[in-house]
Length: 302
Image 1 (cartoon, helix red, strand yellow):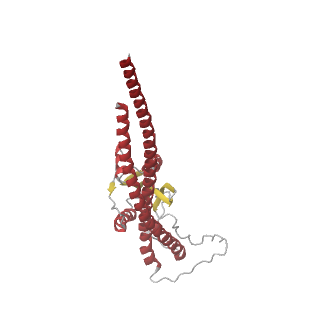
Image 2 (cartoon, helix red, strand yellow):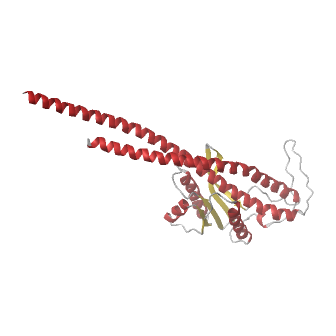
């Protein structure tokens, strides 16, 4: 009887855990649907702003801007700011582990090249990891849930000011890039200097032959191009950082949703297995009791 009771207690505990994982799966699904709309809705805007800045920088000609500077041999990258975006809670499968492995690999690579890395960590899981690794954290980033653009804008302005002042030579973001509901990839994105926004070609440089029938767009500027770049280049940095946070949040929710669904399915299988064990134990116990009763009856007849 003791074995059957133990199985019943264990089955009850597994059922309680299944209720918790099922509830967490439903919450993660609701958050994922809400976050997916925001992430998918902001991506075209972020992409179009970057394309517009690329065309504008190429059309303007020789124009200088602090956010377009490129480190050369004399201005080699020495100090790098790395923003690592993780979650505050666990139970999200390999989400945090994948991001932290990519960030750790990037840090080791930069240190091997002689560069210094300042860590800016968002999420309690990332803070705990780097504290365990005994790596100093320059700043712990607290982001509200749900994510607000105003919070990310303050952080982006901080990095812009540091980059313009020469306090850092580059800014990178380690995050989980949300590609689709079934595909998320850990990446280390270059935030500053602006990736993909090439500086205008030098005077006298040979023009590259254009392929296809794409026509060059001629712009008329009002106000002047420098004023437009002063407005659009910081906007590009802010939107890129905000998009990284949005992708990371959406990837976290989908990872937790899949993880909790897997846990719920495993709990269902365990309940069925324990039920079969209980039935076998109960059947064996009844058989033993019947044998004892029959043995007692035979003994009384004798």
